[in-house]
Length: 444
Image (cartoon, rainbow, N blue to C red):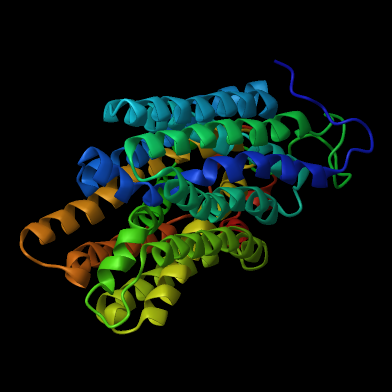
C-alpha cells in the first residue's frame, strides 16, 4: 500500500490534527475506571476482575505495536489508522454484545483483545510521520499528537459517566454506552484517515537534504543495544507507577477520603479522573516540548525523581489534605504523560529516524508489561488489605510504596543511557555524532 504523499504546498501543521483525531479516540482507554463500579455491580465482579479488559487492552497495545511497527513503517500511516479504526470500534461493539448478554468474556475479548490491537496500531501510526515532518522539533511534534491519547479521557470520562447515568448502571445500560462509543469513534477516527499525508521523498520540511544523516540504527539492531533496554526499563517503571493510579483513580480518591468530613461523591470522582486526564494531556505537550530545550535525559530525571517524591507525599500526608492529594496525583500524571510523549524523540536522538517508528513499537512492550503490573499491584494489594479488614488509605499504602521503588529503578536505568556504539549503526555517522559527550548532551 502506497502512503499518501503530500502535494506541493501542503502544510505540515495539518498532520498533528490528523494524528489527534485518532489519539483522542483511542485515549478513551484512560477513562476505563468510570466503567469499573457499574460493571462490578451489574456482573458481580471484583476490582481485579473489572480491571482485566483494561489490562489486556494495554498488553495488546504493546504487542500489536511491537509486531506491527514494521508494517506501519512499510504501509504508511493511512493504512495503520484504518486498521486502528476497524479494531477499536469493533472492540466496543463486541463489548456491547457482551454486556447485553452478561457474558463478561466477550467484554474482555472485545475491549481488551480486539480493541487493544486498535490501540497499539493507532498509537504508533503517526509517530515516524510526525518526526519526518518536524525534524527540527521532534519532542513538540510527538507531544502534540500523543497528548491526544492522554486527553481522550478528558472527553470520555464525563461523557461515559453521563451515559451510565442516563442509560442506567445495568448490563443493558452499559451495553448501550459501549455501542454509542464504538459508532462515534468510528466516525471521528475516519477524519484522521482522510487527512494524513507523508512528506514528499525529494524534500524535507526545513529544506535540508532528504537523505538520512547522523546516527541511524535499524529496529533489528536497536533491540541488541543496552540503550534500548535501559529505555525499556525507564518506560516500564514510569508507566507502572502512573497507570496504577489512573486505572483505579475514581475508587481510590473515594476510599482515601471516605471517613473524612468531606467524602468524595461519584460525580466528583469522575471529575477527578477528568482532571488527571487533563494533567496527562498537558504533560505530554508541555514536558515533551521542554525536552527539546533541556534534553531527554534531564527531563526523565525530573519524571522519575520528582515523581517518587510526589508518591512519598501521598503515602505520608495524602489523606490529611485533599488539595495535596489532588496536586501530587496531577503532577504524577503529567510526568506519566510526558514520559510517553518524550520517548519517541529520545529514540530518535539515540537511533536516528531510519526505523524510529518500528523501534518505538518494540519499546511499547514495556507498556504491555506495565499495563499488567500497575493495575495488578494496586488492585491485588487493595483486595488483600480489604480482606484483612483495612479501609481508606490503608488499602493503598503498600502499593504506593512499591511505586516509589519502581521509580528509583527507572531513575538508575536512565542514568545508564549512553551513546549507541558505531557497530550498531545502519549508516556510518560523522565522527562528532558518535562522540560520547555530544550524544550525551543530545540525550541528556
